[in-house]
Length: 112
Length: 111
Image 1 (tube, one colour):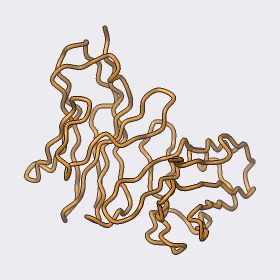
Image 2: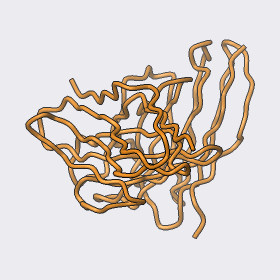
Image 3: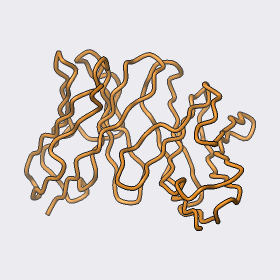
């Protein structure tokens, strides 16, 4: 059973640029959630996708957007990057229902 | 407001001592509560959830709705328990919804 995989592992961008982060969900999982984890903080919910539709969103501006594909993999896109966007971005997948979420290793994004 | 509070950033104990990691939550409905753990250089993983009432690696947690708490306990700490522990709340019971995390508590078990 392949777990949640995220790419890239590290990324350096400058203010104003755009970035796309990718996530492959665990086999059999149709729900993907994205979280932002700033240094020294717990993960914060960005949004969730279920069967290619956004299914809940946290307190993040519209420049944070996402997609889910028919194979349930997902992308997180962030436009107009700001210094405060520097964080670890975590993807988590689940089979839906009341099943718990399984996390990937994350993508470390640094904004210069 | 939906919130999870872990009052201790760092908890340091000696091997064999009891451990209690505190978690308090704020939510008006019937949440589902979880403990996630992150060992050094590993990904975040589920330790236990309140509805399963299991004991994992000797850890237990009881949901106290009156005190809105979900403290994690272990009677005898081991060095391999050293890790970052996050308490999390899912406000949508049985719907696999978003997780609201606390800030985390780093547990250090000394020999």
